[in-house]
Image (cartoon, rainbow, N blue to C red):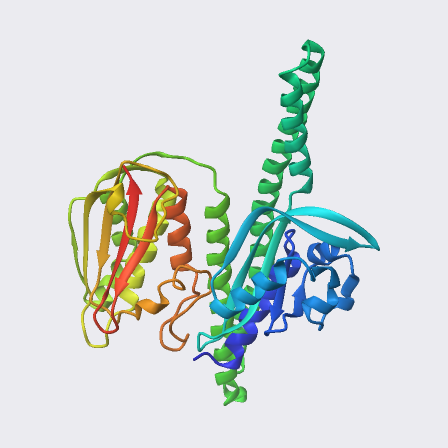
Length: 408
């Protein structure tokens, strides 16, 4: 389990990212959904000011009664299963005026160290204007089929407006990527100062500090973990917004490069790695490098004490009908490459399978195994970007096999 320093660090980073985000985000705690954290975009959506903090959602936003959202939130809290939907209307009362707005939103359960749900992160992007533009375009196209060339000009105008909206969305994505970089840089700079001043204190005042050196070491360790978490968050953000640079990629060369990067860890753990012939796929080399680096580093990290890691990488192909049940690929294909990364490590209980590919979800405490809980979420995002799925099979103490399915 992590100590209080780790908890405060993670919460501080979470609040910083939430409050700087241009996307509406709120943290609702407990069965009553107490509004604990909400950024300015979220407060603007609700239109009730900061008086909502500390209140149950149903009381703070009374117009929620009679709409499906409270029931959905209760279901997410009960089951722990994420709910997400698009183009959803909601009735809001903002500054005393009732209006209908449209959102793409998600409700995601937040768990404590014991795995129990204690709150929900609600995120949403208002798309009312885009919906209006789409409806206007559809109406224009309908009129076009019945009217003369003078509506022709109106359709062209609406098409131009829609194209402008698309450009605005592209600019918004670019701004989000820039925001992620700036947030990362601004959060990293004070952490570097903490570590630098800690080194100076240890070098110049070691004798005077005495037992205080222990606190400095803990402070620097926490700062180092925060720095790693920020870098991983930036990687996740970049993969989510990165433009498609697909080309023919040799997975054998990708794995070879990943093993070179992990050479010191492989030597330290006396790991033995067997790699079979791997296919050439259509994809982004940088993202695929992230995928195999994370999977291989996990296989090395979660080894059994006193047992040298044994890792095997092999591939084959399957028909679409043979994909694992309940795994829907992001791109339809007749067949898929299957790449297995199998290890002899500590394994895990498969009842946690739905959690391991989610951001910030960890099955082990920081003191047991270092990490940020983002690596496998990056893997899932990369595979999704390539139109495939990723899953795993495992038993405690019996090792794990991660299977990546990519369309042929």
